[in-house]
Amino acid sequence: MRTPMATAPALPPSPKFWKRVPRGPVLVFAPHPDDEVAGPGGVLAMHRAQGDAVRVVVTTDGITGDPDRRFAAADYAERRRAESRAGLRELDVHDVAFWGFPDSCVLSDADLERGAQLAAAAITAFAPALVYLPWQLEAHPDHHALHIVVSRAMDRLGFAGLALGYEVWNAMLPDVVVDTTAVFEQKRRAMLAHHSQIAYVQYDHCLGGLNAYRALVHQRGRGYAEGFARVRGALPGELAEPV
Image (cartoon, rainbow, N blue to C red):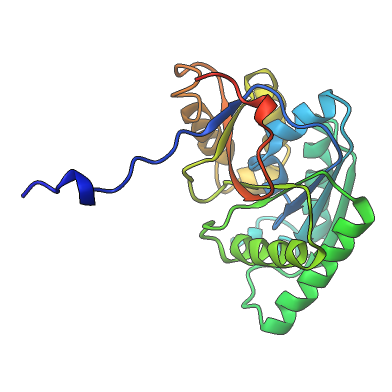
């Protein structure tokens, strides 16, 4: 039976298309060492190319990323941090902080509260114009928890800037798509710097495929793009390209 048009699902709005990124200091929250490049790595390179200050906060130590014990446990957390620094250098990002919390844990309300306090302190200290965080429907529990933590912090602070959610584990219906073709090879190198993770999952291939897919509509399937969901603030209209 055909669904009447009056009750059919509405056509989703077309995402904005940017060839540039907003100017101003940028603060990035990443659940694990590698998410900062796997998700918004292309736009971070674009921010740095236009002179924006970029600070990355990696919240967990990523020690569950070696389930087969392929690497020495004693220095595995430091290995992950070193890979994060190396990957970010490919994007010309040199300001990174590591909170060092254990990953893949069931978080209590007290844990979320502590995280929100730390996120609020990080936002206050850096005073970003733009915050990147995992988008709200990321399926990995650490990603989902970090979205809650950072959103709670921004709400408490009355953060007046723009916050955009990035995708890693779940593809979204984006509010904005950013052309990252010119910086994609930087992003690829940044992902490949995470040797301990590439040993398990060829995620440069997977995320590269997602970024190629994002070019389907606005770029006629040529090049690469990153998709983002608006979490807070207004999308600057002057960046939108005609569709």
